Image 1 (spheres, protein in one colour):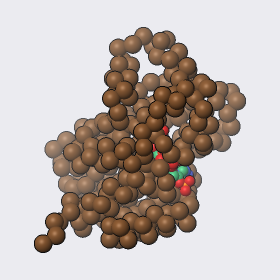
Image 2: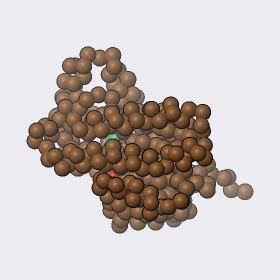
Image 3: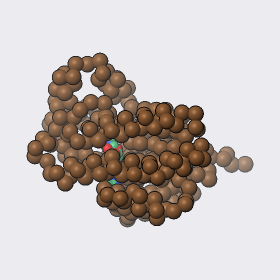
Image 4: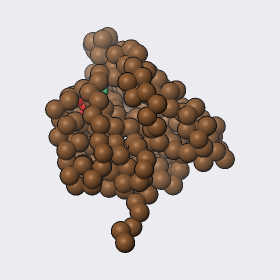
Amino acid sequence: MARKRKGTGQTALITGASGGIGLELARCFAKDGYDLVLVARSGDKLQAVADSMSNQYHAQVSVMPCDLGVIGAGAELAARLGDRPIDVLVNNAGYGEAGPFAATDSKSQLGMIDLNIRALVELTHVYWPRMLKRRHGGVLNVASTAAFQPGPFMAIYYASKAFVLSFSEALWEEARGTGVHVSCLCPGATESDFHTRAGTDKVRLLRMGQMSAAKVARLGYRAFRTNRRVKVTGLRNTFMAWSVPFSPRPVVLRLVHYLQSA
Ligand SMILES: NC(=O)c1ccc[n+]([C@@H]2O[C@H](COP(=O)([O-])OP(=O)(O)OC[C@H]3O[C@@H](n4cnc5c(N)ncnc54)[C@H](OP(=O)(O)O)[C@@H]3O)[C@@H](O)[C@H]2O)c1
């Protein structure tokens, strides 16, 4: 008799699932038996991911093309899904933009806050009470190693990820004893389209090496399954993240400035 997979009968809603880390997270959940609701702006790419997940893993997959950067889009998406139970919410959609703050476009900087923070909070606020009531399920938020310190020349992105980390850890504590999981995945540099959009594809940080999106996703999925509060990917990233509070702030700022430069 076939082994029952851990996610059988459950649904994971994954934002930013058309590529990169989100696509690979979708694979982890589908492989373990979850059905999927996939969200991103590109409907065609999402459909291709959906076809591949249902062919390979027999997952039932719904595709919800949606610009989560639009204010209210998260709540509207949840309304479209109605009472459909969402067991796991994966807030992964996000983008960054590099450059001196004075020279950046305000629309894009505020858009980062709308997507990386506002949409994440909006969706969590819909599904979190339902999870607590059922004493089941959870939230996997994708932050970054950027969450651990300020990021000169990528200031809003770093600050947005600090928000995600802080928010996630607070929810983890609020969920203690309820059976609801909360994990914050903090990847370091990862192979994906992220850096082309962010304008960081030539910076020193990337030349130090990148992890594959598939490996990052596997680590994140495992962290979520075990209700690990924070998961930083890779030994070097872990060391750097946890050493920040013990390092003089001016040194940290200079180091980030150096690593974010070409
Ligand atoms: N790559 C890295 O080095 C790295 C490191 C640390 C953390 N992260 C974080 O990991 C997450 C995933 O990034 P990634 O590396 O996989 O980047 P990616 O390949 O650029 O993927 C981003 C995903 O988000 C979706 N997305 C972007 N804007 C959206 C919007 N307005 N509404 C809905 N979906 C939107 C994209 O799809 P559409 O374009 O089709 O909308 C895509 O599916 C992000 O939160 C990022 O901050 C990445």
